[in-house]
Amino acid sequence: MTRPDPDEPVPPAPGVRPFLQSGPQHSTGGYTPTGENPPVEASTHKLRPFVITAGRTDGGDPDIGMETQVTLVPGAPPSRLSPETRAIVSLCEESPISVAEISARLRLHLGVTRILVGDLRAAGQLDVHVLDNDTPDPDTIMRVIRGLRSIS
Amino acid sequence: MDFDPSANRVVGTARVSGGGPKKAPVPVKIIVAGGFGVGKTTTVGAISEISPLTTEAEMTSESVGIDNPGQAVLKTNTTVAMDFGVLTIDQTLKLYIFGTPGQTRFAFMWDDLVRGALGALVVVDTNRIDDCYPAVDYFERQGLPFVVGINTFNGEMSYSIDEVRWALAVREDVPVISFDARFRASVRDALLVVLDQALDKAIRMQS
Image 1: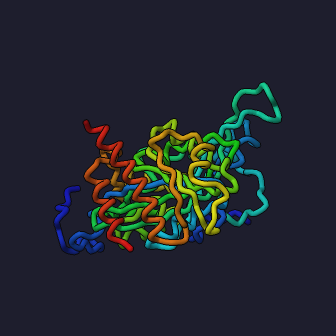
Image 2: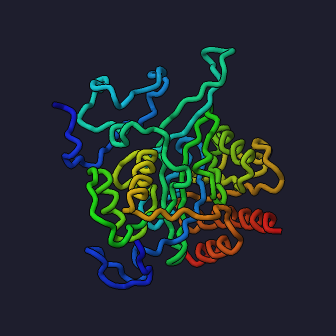
Image 3: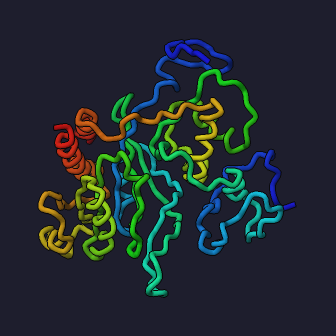
């Protein structure tokens, strides 16, 4: 019907609905992924984000920041991926990329991106380079200062 | 699974070249905050090496019920669009600049955004100074180094720097500067002031 088959390649959904935006209107706990007939929305041609994340709305691993770099695990075993996760993996093929860039380029909500990146890390497809120490140190700041000064 | 990270050969179907995907740069970030339409995106775009990208993110906002006085603080999740840009410092270091909205009536729960940030530039339009109050409040509470940057995009300021400082009542050591968000060199200089504050704090923390 109007709900897309999950295996069908879904184009990166522009204007994908934020999964928590309508929170207050669904104060009974929001949607549950078990319900067969989620309320029909005005635009049913896009997967709602909580469908992509199988109902998870917790925003993912807090260690995964917006600027956190993600790379492909070399020679990761082939794995059955959803269209969204496949798109994420192919974005990482070229060079390291940040979570925010993945979110922007695929037009996936940041929270959704974080959950999916966490899944791909757990599945051994992606390396997520979480910094051990996220307090900036003077040496790093000096390098940024020198780098900025050198641009005109 | 044990891979030799220095391997420079075809592994499976993925070619791993030297210094390739395996090696990720260290990301650092600066926040550009301020009210609607003050020039945050212009600021980000002026310094970024890519055209600014947009991501949608959650922000939890707290609003004390104005319609329902006496009610507890209401927490709602609002989705906001965030523009950001990138500047490659060198192969191992990347600077991200995140522009983030700051509407009034929202107390910010920007913890994700701010964690690990070097500092923030609060962009101010002198015609609507109060738009930046929430951001200033937030960064003060967080102890994040920040600088107030008056965007002189009209080539004029309705108030002087001293008057803006007085209106904001920021601490002595918080720089209040003017800059033009349209020009790269001007944005660069404003960010250098932020970095200077960040460096001060980092050195204080170390000793």
